[in-house]
Amino acid sequence: MSGVKPKTRTATPPATTLEGVNPKRLTIVEYPAAVLRKKAVPVEKITPDLAAVAERMFALMREQKGVGLAAPQVGLSVRMFVCNPTGEPQHDLVCVNPKFLELVGAEEGPEGCLSLPDVSVTMRRATKVIMEALDARGKAYRVEGKDLCARVWQHEVDHLNGKLIIDTMSDTDAIANRRAIKALDDKARDNKARAAKKR
Image 1 (cartoon, one colour):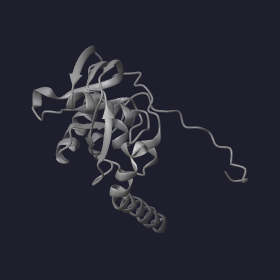
Image 2 (tube, helix red, strand yellow):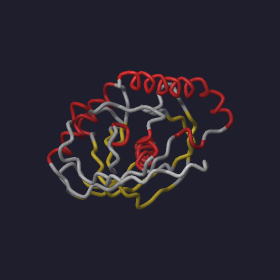
Image 3 (tube, helix red, strand yellow):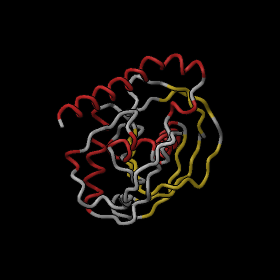
C-alpha cells in the first residue's frame, strides 16, 4: 500500500447486457489480464447479441480443444459461460447467470485452463452438481452434471468469481507450473511495453 493519494475518477458501470458487442472481435485473454480477477456481474437483459457471443465463444473453445469457456476469458465481465464436455454438438450448453443448488462428493483431478496455457493444477471438486441457469434465449432451466461435466461447471463458475486454478496450487504444482506462469507474465509485460511505444 502506497502513500500516494489516488486520483478521483468516475467509475464505469459494469456491463449487464451483451448488446452491441461485436463477437468477431472476441479473443481468448490470458493471465494476468485484469478481467480474469473481477467478479462478473449478472446479465440483466437477454438480447440477440448474447446468442452471437455464445456462438463465438464455442468457436474459440473448439479451436483450442477446450471443454468450457467463461465470458471473462473473452474480456466480458458478465456471468455467462459455455461448455461441452463430450465434444458432441448436441451437448453444447449456454449458461447465463448460473447458480449451484447442490454440490455432492469430492474428487481430485488435473485441470487446465485456456487462459493459462501449459498450466495444469490438481483441483478438488464436487463430483455431482445441480445447477440453475438461463439459456441463450433467456429460458430458465435446471440440470444435473456428474464427474467431468460437474468439474467443468465448477471451473467456469470460478472464472465468474474472479478465481483461477493457480490460486490454490499445492507446492508441487507451484514448482511444476512456475516456468509457464513466468512466461505468461513476461509476455504480458512485453505486450504492454510494445503498446506504450505505439502511443
